[in-house]
Length: 542
Figure 1 (tube, rainbow, N blue to C red):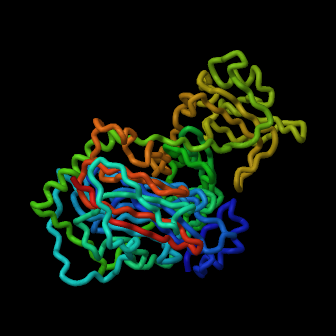
Figure 2: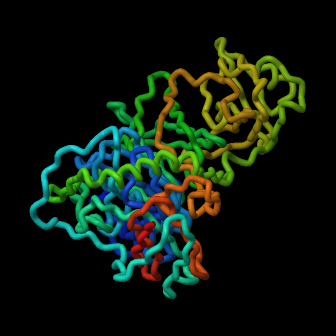
Figure 3: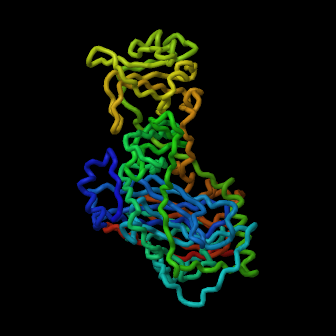
């Protein structure tokens, strides 16, 4: 039986867990993708559009998707995490510079989709050329492959012919007009055998082990971790704070197996994590778990060999030239994530610049924050918060934070200079944080979300954790913003990339100076969750 771990925000989902465990069709997700091109040079960027559908719309789709590029040994060489909006996202994979020339498998999935259904993972071969790292000698395939890849739409018999650096009109099939469509026009890959063109689902992988956890993500990313203590204390609270343009704090208690789960919800824009626990005596024995699933290819699934011949030299030189100018001449722009509500609703807020600045937190609190009481006990500084509902003072310690990072060393905090602290929020009532109850809250926020210079606690762990990819957009669907300037260098191997938008009329497409066959590929998601494709060959010539 699969293990499914409940979370604080998923209390309603507990009723549905038996259905998840049985893998009923109501909860299976179908993952489909449209990739901008299937041949690239090491260091280039490959764009993609991803669509995740669940058969019954009354249930929440996953909010997070995963992309991986794997080599012929089945090992990931590039990985990324992507936020989904209504089951859709546009993202990119940056091809590592050091990869050897070879065929690689690009796969997409959600945290649960491949476990529940073969349709929950999309796989497509990508050919990578690295002029500094030639392909290995791989055995030639003499028999038909054991697994059949599905063509992304049958190629039309008649081939369009257009001269280099010319605009032409592509007639969009009527069944794709006025629908949300993705379109790519990219160079045809001559090195990938025909039997391996297109896509294939999860049938190429071994079954996941029965104890593989199901971690649904209907509200946002979940950070899984392990309490590595030999004796598990299920009452110990662990804290993870995520930091970027904003900060958010999450807490969790481990189960008997030491499993911990921290739900980020709508928060996406983080650069690093900090982990702590309420045990401030012992060193934190804690490790994050990779969110990427442990796929294993079946033994009878083989990668095709990459065979390069001397006659391929001109085409390869064109590919390399295109890659060298792409990053400079065909820029993309960052798209900022919208701010999300983090933290809590305070009872009172102090903007520190509105008051006299003092050299330490203790003096600041004593002078103009009457809701916080500063005391000394056994030579240790203690902070207590007023209990407004009972018109008294809490005896227990409050939750203290700087930029959502819990602070347990009150002596260090009392001596800290708050010069770079922007505001102080105070809650003067009981505060429930997941399964813990705190006697008020004292929360500091710095100007630059950098803790205001407060040092990382001694027993805290700084965690380098995979980020959710920050969105980017091409500045033009043609990649080249100066597409009509004849003096502008144009060596594009992807002529057009247009994602998740409605097409109302025929498309204007511009060819580049690269003479070759191109594939015009259109995709649209059907009402039943299937992806429908249509493609046509384009010949660019003198």
